Length: 329
Image 1 (cartoon, rainbow, N blue to C red):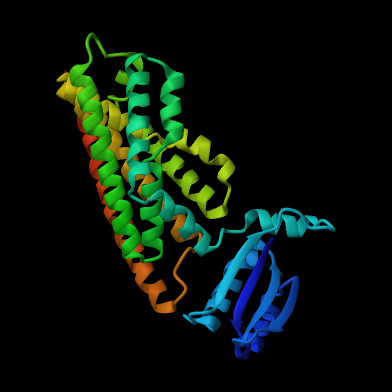
Image 2: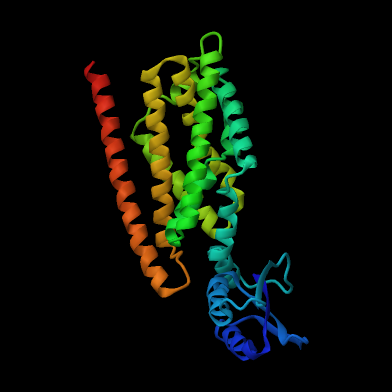
């Protein structure tokens, strides 16, 4: 359940009242008109009607410079909802604008993002070299590379080229920083670094692709439904950083054969996460507000899905060739 506060020209209040009635707002109240001709309105809506209510309000208000729509969560509402209403709330999608606000923060390329990548890469490298599972999981939980991937998927769903470009640049910079730093660690580290944890991330199979697909779908679904409580488990399951760190470590250590396996695992994870995100956003109906933009977004989404499917098939074929070569040798 959400409380929506609207500040709008008093001339639009009748239409806003009609929107509240059409969307079956659970409560609707009007405030007084101020000297500038702006009037305050408040309405209470269920989560499953939040997106359609926001769409209706945005259509009415357009780009009016003084108009505002504020959405606030409800911590507690008494009396309690009945069971049917509660189930609708639990299954409702997060609002498009809330999704955008969440992912664009995680896709922002700034010093905080770069520092997170540096710190998590160091944590992952030490955990992999020292064969410490708990430390590796710590790097997985930080998961700085997951945000740009989710943002890229949402940008595709909304046909937002700016978000797609920003998330792509953030991901590219993050990967380059992680690989460069871990390659330096592999070059300077004294002694044997070929631990069990590290070697496990140089071997890729079809199960790796299946796990990445399922984990990517879980990540997108947790984002779309606002279930942030499961994101920590998703971060561990997706695990984009350890393969990238392993790739860099093996490059620095001079084991190109093992670096190739780690690089292939990282590529499979990235492709599967992006493919799964796009499929989830498509099937859950996450799209732009305007009809024309919806058509463009759907066309763009289908093109990207096709590209990712073809890329995944090529990677699976590469995995097959590697495994066949290992068997024949």
